[in-house]
Image (cartoon, rainbow, N blue to C red; front, side, top):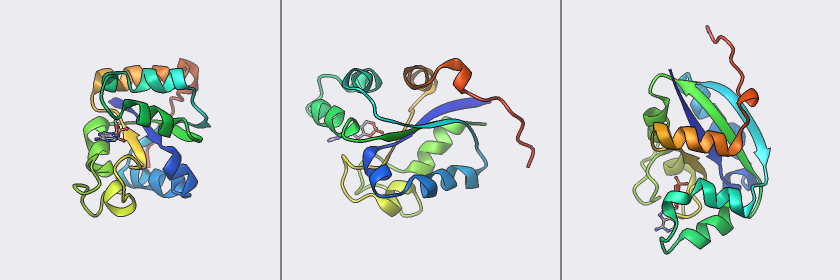
Length: 143
Ligand code: CMP
């Protein structure tokens, strides 16, 4: 069983897409184990996007992600990291296929609505950047 960190970005919150985005992952059969609306600090944003530090868009990315509340989540399921990235769609909106969240709702690349961890190490690091261990709820999901 795997866990991933997913985050509805400020554009998704402002456009009222939190519910529809959550539905995509519920429909897929994944289990929500944590979720909260948070205004993240610049330091927290820089930690989250540490792998992009030095890239030309880094400053713009930090400004964008701190521009308003985000909805941070932890989801659980078999292969949830890879499968949730398929549900999300490609980073560049011109490559995001219809049927994916970005393909259906995003029209400008920096404003691509949602972040998803790209591997087990980043998932662990990103979850720890947003959640205390006791905020992750273990419960059985049989239906
Ligand atoms: P995300 O999945 O959150 O991971 C890194 C983010 O960097 C990505 O989504 C985009 O929002 C952003 N990003 C990637 N490439 C570019 C780019 N060329 N210009 C602006 N933002 C970018």
